Image 1: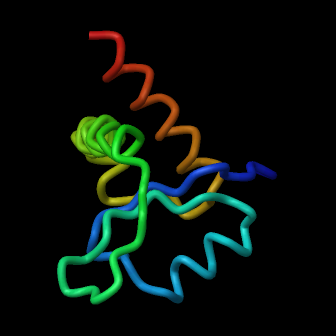
Image 2: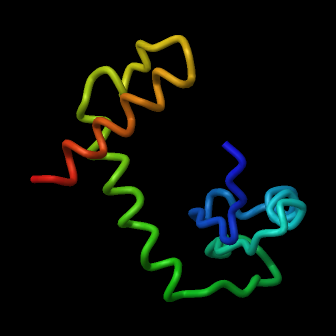
Length: 93
């Protein structure tokens, strides 16, 4: 699709140096809450991190569509079409 992320939001479970390096290679900024076991805490944008739950709620809604949740479609283009359809249906009501 050619989309380039500017920010990557992730939970503390994804707080690793390898993931942060990968995000840096994408030329994006990592907004990952530091894992409590990390000795040197990394900084993150708390305001941006608060909006992560909106994305999680969106995916919870579209997964109510069985075809999206079980990924019946073999082709990525067909699957993407059903994700768009599910997103349109769930955000209307």
